[in-house]
Length: 124
Image (spheres, helix red, strand yellow):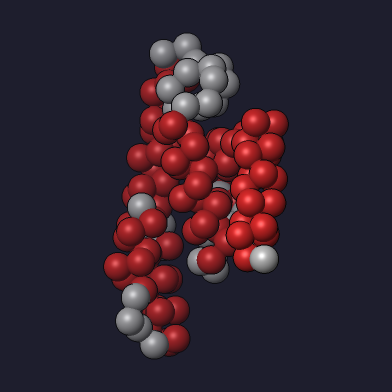
């Protein structure tokens, strides 16, 4: 889904980017199309008895990690996609909870902290 954004925005001037982004983020736009697909995966998991709100089971999997990584990048770099934009929509609250679950995981926080230390020492 991040590729959809990149393809639509790369090489465009600011005004063209704003128009393309508005098109992607509208109710029947491509970003919401993909968000709806992810929300449907959550619903399917819940229908199978998954109570955690995750895509596959009760524990984090690569599916949630990959999703959260893409979302984190998109929400940080693309206006209108964060909590104050599309992700603030009620039907995507569950998706936001996945991002928060990944970001709040102690193992992931420890990894990111060590990664930042490694990057800092590499720059020295």
